[in-house]
Length: 433
Figure 1 (tube, rainbow, N blue to C red):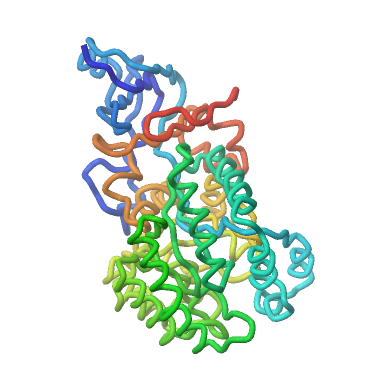
Figure 2 (figure 1 turned 180 degrees about the vertical axis):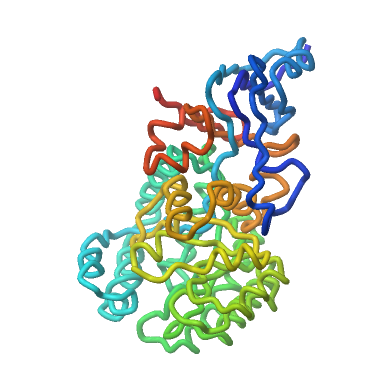
């Protein structure tokens, strides 16, 4: 008799997203989400093995026949509900101390991002508080934020450092990310070193670039080699008044040289041709892209670089939206992220999908692809995450609705929709909805 971890049975729908081992979807393929529907009274079931991976997906009658002699640690009857992949947040800044709610009023009064920044607010305000905070304080704040993200359906998240701007604090933040990766079973983290998030006070951009390349990265490499840190990606804020294209190229190349994947901020406030530079370096992903040019879009498409779109940034800062439709039409794989940070305090990927549909004219199918398989691609996890396929990690949401689209349609309604959050086949959150 076979002993397995989990059986989810009788669902109204199972949203596979894709099922041919695609590494990402682009163009017209983003509109074709694969959904397995209930056939009459014959619902849909998902089987999870002991390894926390999906063993089978199919109609209940077929699954019952295939696994007639199996026992399960847990059985969930999802009659009338939908099963879908856990959501993947492609861009966050979640390790920090200090509250910036006071800056919201400044922005509402018309202050730009850079005006707040130059007034000593923005990143610098958070850097000061994060530098003063203990590692334990940062960990507890981070843990509570991750719990809120998970309750909103996020099972995997990209997380950046970047509020240190000095070696000691950047390492402190990366230690927090590493500890959470090892200790918290309810969410999975892709860790990004973002020491080049701003120019530290008292340094020129050239001095800051040299510090990152010659001081910070070598120390981080040593700690990774010793097993003290887990770091996956390298980021830089490639922007006018911060790190220019040449400085960004040097930093990203230095990170790539020590095995980090390139995943960086590009073309947010000004067009610098950073997207073309990133494509030349074979960047795995680039974020923001509000000001990207047609040539930058073409370069990203040719390089298969994922565009991580952040609807909250344009919304909160009243910027123009990135040209998402152009990107999709040109064949750029598009992903989504919350950009959670003190400037954009959003932890809900379902709300992000809603904003992407309304403000950026994405379809619901495109938004779901961007929050699952394409977001997985942006952090190098598309072979194991982002769709309901046999062999992939069993990160599931079960929503109490007859169609999956309700998760996008019901703006801010995830607390009344998400019945179960399942990570690697284990129930990590359940509600009474």
